[in-house]
Amino acid sequence: MVKIKKLILILMVVVLIVLMCHNIFPNWFLEVIRLLKEPATFISFLTTTLGITGAYLVANYQVSKSLKYANPQYLQNFNTAQVPIRYFIEIAKKISNVISTEERVEARYKIYWSDFKEMEENLFCAIQIMNPEISDELVRKDLPSALSKKMNTHRLIIINP
Image 1 (cartoon, one colour):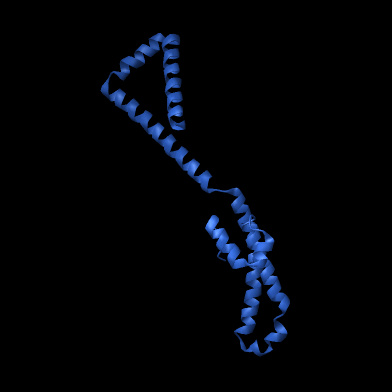
Image 2 (cartoon, rainbow, N blue to C red; image 1 turned 120 degrees about the horizontal axis):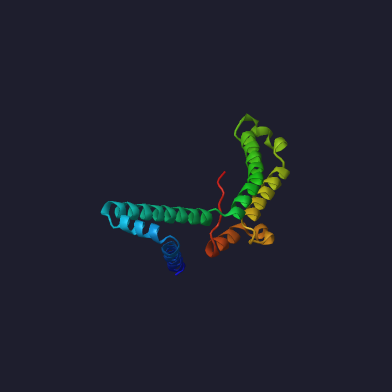
């Protein structure tokens, strides 16, 4: 419906311009009409007009698509969530390095409960940033059911580091 209105508006503007040219510059307008009666000139005019119109429509379609998919709030949340995700990865690598090497016998002295709590906090923080509509209490109480509830109602934003 909106495209039809735009098309009608464009046609009315073109008709208005033609009528103005006919009234203001009658000799020039008659010369243009005489030239447009020649097949080569008419075909050139027609292809140029269609080319410009097609280029405009394609560009307009691409811009509308890119604006539709470029959600600035999502991108800002995604960039903000990268900080706790990086901290989570750093702590996970630290724990992994202790567990997967010969130092695992001393793991209880190198890995603290606070490391796991910090990982948990970073995970919850990233989830809250990306999905603000999930309440913090619900995420802390039962993360799997909160995620499944989110997946059933909306799309869940999953971040792969």
